[in-house]
Amino acid sequence: MSDFKVIDSQEEFDLRIKDRLQRKEEQVRNELDEVINNLKAENENLKSENSELMTNIEKAKEKDTEIENLRGQIQGYEKSELRRKVALDNNIPYKLAERIKGDTEEDMIKDAKSLSTYFGEREMVPPLRNPEGDSGENSALKDLLDGLDFED
Image: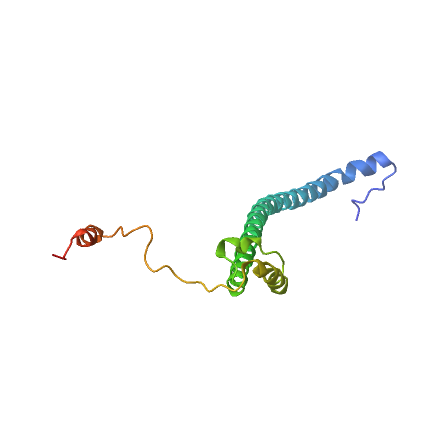
């Protein structure tokens, strides 16, 4: 205990604890550097993950718009098919099926009934033969047989 010396001034106190403060400061700096490096690495990982997620979101938005477009097309096809069905059920010519108005089947049936008064009750009769002529393999033979006169 004889080594103990009383510190009389601030300068003397600063001089004695200088080494201890430097060691502690270095220890804290090392710890902070390690924490900073970990945070930087985590930040980079999060940035790359974020960019991947943003890319996926953009792809999903594109798919959503494509799905909506396809749904719109399907609804258009369904509406067109419904118009065609209502037209045929009400004896309206197929070519005029697109003239039928309405958003629901009931509205379309009302419109089709009002249009059907102009066409009356007609039964659809298929043609007896092809008016454009046969264009198959045997058409030349049929023409030849039609042109022969068997009556003598």
